Amino acid sequence: MYKAQDKMCDLMAHEEEAIQIISRFGLNMGVGDQTIESVCEKHGVHTPTFLAVVNYKVFRQHPSMADIDLNTLHRYLLHAHTYFLEFRLPRLRKALEEAVMPAAKDSQIPMLILQCYDEFVQEIKTHIEHENAGQYEEHEHDDERITDKLSEIKKLIIKYFPADTTQTSDDESQHLHVSYPLIGVMSDLWHTEQDFADHCAIEDEILRPAAANKRHRHTEEPETEELSEREQDVLIQLVKGLSNKEIADVLCISTHTVISHRKNIARKLNIHSTAGLTIYAIVHKLVDIKTLK
Image (spheres, rainbow, N blue to C red):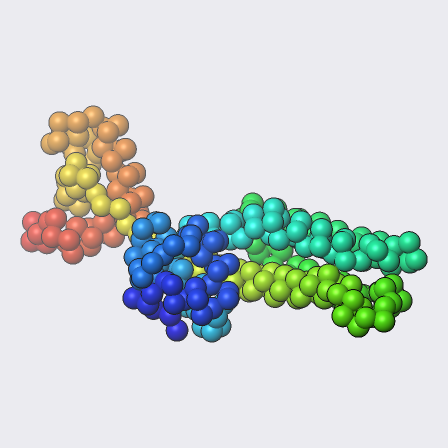
């Protein structure tokens, strides 16, 4: 498990996955001997969220949802989307075309492989568009189907790509050299499949649970805003049993202002009964119970 005081350079040098992670958090090379925490703080990245993603991707260590900053994680995912759409997928498409098209004059299979790849890219674009719009739950079951399509492309090449398109030569090294582009593409397809699967896993295992945890805490334990001094004055008079008009007279404000303050008090404390407000005032020592009617 990597920790905040570990050196960022050690993480980047020892973990292949870390190179992708740092770029998606908006970090760069040239980190010197700085710690993970210092690099993150320098670039405004929430360190526990960075470590949560690193340790999940490297060790499959599930983080505490309380450690996750959703804004930081959301930015990470948006950067990952940009990487897939603007760099990795177009680059892979070009490499795939260069590797399979020499066989197109003898077979339709290369064109069908490219068509299958283009369909895969379109599905990823649709998937990402929904994610960018915040519609994670609606499409959480698309992930496996999309990665299956990329695996299908690999199998199509392995099983059906024309076997007789490689140039023949008495020189065995020449024969192997002609196969290198296709071998490279197969490796790229494999890494892309794994990268996208990890991307989806981070959404499923970190983003969605963290978002659900935040909603649950907001629902079960709503944070209360502090009352202003004037709102405290109104609350004190209210729990003493004064009417709106009497409170207005005591505090030299209008009845309308008293009503407005009462609404704000109820909203901030999420307490709407006079009995509940009385208990709050007693507990927070705004009134002495002996002075109440």
